[in-house]
Image 1 (cartoon, rainbow, N blue to C red):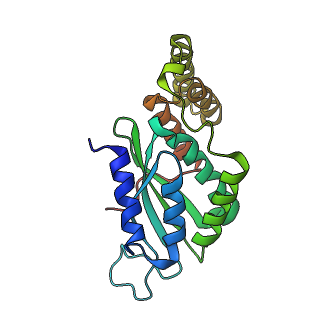
Image 2: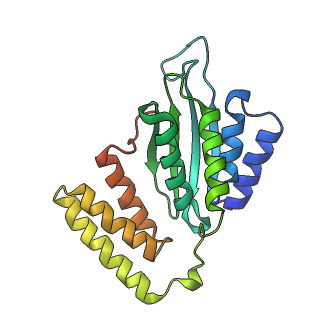
Length: 206
């Protein structure tokens, strides 16, 4: 698996060289400035639609990787919150899959959603909260925390199977606070958010 840092450097270099369309360049830059986030592809929309998978002129999308070992989970939560505040139902986040400690997502803006407005909101949020507490070193996660996190995951799993998604989410979030590097809990949280309609499941072919 390629180094996350090398992937992130490549994404930043591509944006700096003009490889990203102007309308979403600021947002792509902000995404790549967030801990644990790396963009992989993007589209600012097209006036002429040539095929069913092409993005309309008033829409945009960004595909990105979330690396939980370098603070990506907290960055994803920040993106989700700011997307809801600035775009409401016009900005959605889609979860694709979770290989190891990395998850793949797409953020899509529709109906004249503003990527610039989202970018500015993220920048302001970073200034207000700082970049601290995004990464929890493994050395600081005690065995007791890991054990309790697993217990939270199991409780969440039981509630999920019963269809109590909101209650399951509470346990998954508690588990991630105890052990932010647990990729199983992150995956289960993502599946719960899909069930709750806060993020979308796979819908677009790459």
